[in-house]
Length: 615
Image (tube, rainbow, N blue to C red; front, side, top):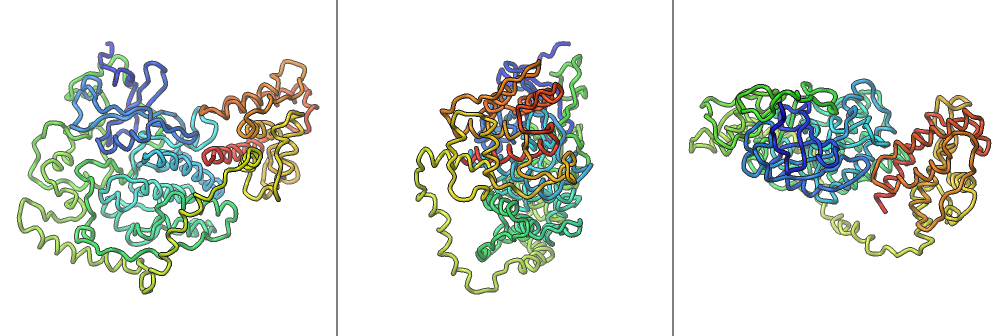
């Protein structure tokens, strides 16, 4: 039977449901005109506004938001039910692949790789924040470790995976709407998970998770055999319970990780003393402010029931009519949004699993949580304490005071040691608060040659070049083989790395690029030399693709937002062909590219991405 459902906004059709769609209506789809695969997710008005700000943002480590549709026809939805007032759908780019969550189930990551990956994700999130967007569901489940069609891992998906409790800060768990500092917490928690293969916190309910966060910091890295005092300090600052002592600025997080990469043994610089805490209200003590809790925030506390592979989908049967009434069980879609028409609500108290445990798949009746939200405005407070002080009675505050004495007093005692405010002079460093804003206006405009030299140097580690360098030769016409070799000989290489494919005990000296010096230099030349003549390399006999064509293609593709993987594979294939036909003598490299060379090129591309984003 043909699918009679309308296309959303006349552009997007449904292709199936994501396997992890347990708590949110979320499907796979396709754009009719281009055929590209997308994710279609239902969201409320507040989230749609945030997503709309991120629409069109592009980054090589980010799946972008493609569209936001606020007026959705009921006939276009698989559920056949109208969306609640203010709700709509967001459409994001879909890239399949294995997630970091799945990869960590098999093996952990070393510290250097984990930090490098988190820096790439942080750079993507920074671009998102600059546009006014917030990811709001960042965790290892939303990070593609092996993305299909992208040259450099990782890639941060959007709308695919739900928010996971341990990767949300306490204020978000208490009901606050999603904000940019939430993503900073999530990046710290994801770094912790990448190092330890565990989430920083584990609990079965939201209340238990909040109490665990309040009780202390996560298990130290040393408990997992990781001797990284500086990383431990970075994680402690980013996963602190109290927001006023926590790192909430993404720029500060990136700066500390950059410092660790330069010197892993150097501790991050000291932070200013946090301001004195403001007097806390009674609702803060009992269980949070309840902001935004008139809606389901979609946070999954226990994510063990979610599939490991978030990049897979569950296809809808072609013969199944999609536009069926809600009573039919033919469409395996989890309906968890509140119905537009209020349904009868039982008078008994709501079951606790609606808040704390993992969501269920395809619950037959509409979830009672939403109906209860419509019936009781103070339901957030009910969720956070085991008593119900708002049962249509006027004598509310006596019960709240009892809750404060029983639970809130302990909170005060637990938080007080963290305050670090016994010193009576925290106001002294206040005069230095305005200093960070001073350097920006004094930036001098560089000459064309200075701009070129700064551009070339930005593709290498800081301090790679001694003194002032003149990189005019990079842009000049000449033998490009000599240009590539000379540039990488000028740069001071990092510490020797290990490569199983290298001689002398597997140690790779220099930058470890070898053949990849050619495409790396071509990318630099393309970016820093706008008027340079095309690259020239010697022609080789035989049927192999000319290396000159491949290197030019890599440079051209690097200037686009597309994928570099095909052109990089073409380069590898062309070099291997030269060795197979014994026509590689025109070049100084005596062996075919190794895995270590490819890894070095990946690191170069990571630096290139950061350089492009900062310029």
